[in-house]
Image 1 (cartoon, rainbow, N blue to C red):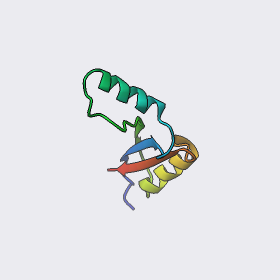
Image 2 (image 1 turned 180 degrees about the vertical axis):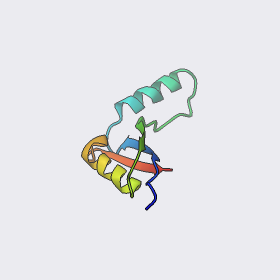
Image 3 (image 1 turned 45 degrees about the horizontal axis):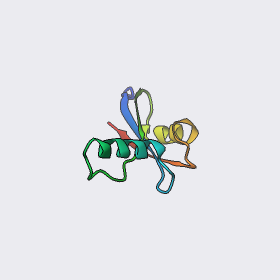
Image 4 (image 1 turned 120 degrees about the vertical axis):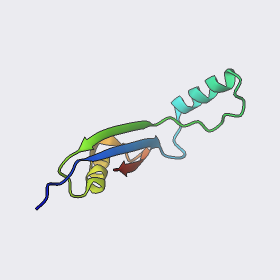
Length: 83
């Protein structure tokens, strides 16, 4: 059996719609204050990148990681990319 390759994983985590994004509001206000009056609905999230070796289902493993640690699923949603 061939060895299982390493996967590049990116997890994007954002507050769910309806949850007040204080950082997003601060960024929006600062950009508007600097003259970018067209900026609205700014949201701030986080990007977590890592290599995952030995997983037959890297997407599934990353989902488990998000559910257990990387995202607070009560107030945050996440999107996983694997390559």
